Amino acid sequence: MDWLIVVFALAVPRQTEHLLSVFFAGKWLMFSKLAASLPCLLAMILISQRQRLWHHGYYGWRIAVLPLLTLGCVIATAMLVIQLLASHWQFEWFLALGLLMYPVFLAVLWRSFHLRLMIADWSKENFDIR
Picture 1: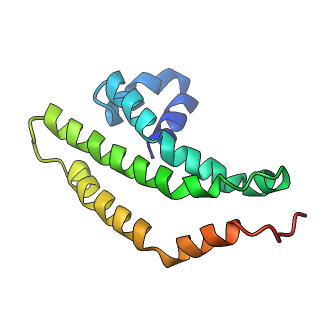
Picture 2 (picture 1 turned 45 degrees about the horizontal axis):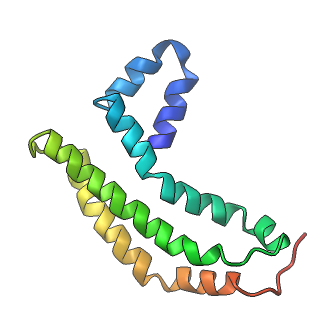
């Protein structure tokens, strides 16, 4: 979500700084949240490019998807805790929902039978490249 906010803010050149200041308290927060979401972004890129990876004979990338998503979720939770520490644990709905959402997402991620089947299926070399 942070990447979308930055992209939309950069799309409006005259109000970029104002739009970014609405969503991020400082530049350090923006850059650290963008860096924290890199593992999830990398997992999405791997998944979206799986056909090209298969075509070139790369099959090991599928093993990295679940750890990358887990790492991204853990880092995002740590970023929320850092934000709470910076605000002296002052209550904010967005941070509270994030602290509730990320552990639930981790539980769903690790218990997802569908994701495990997809990762197992991606290991098979009998695929149809169109």
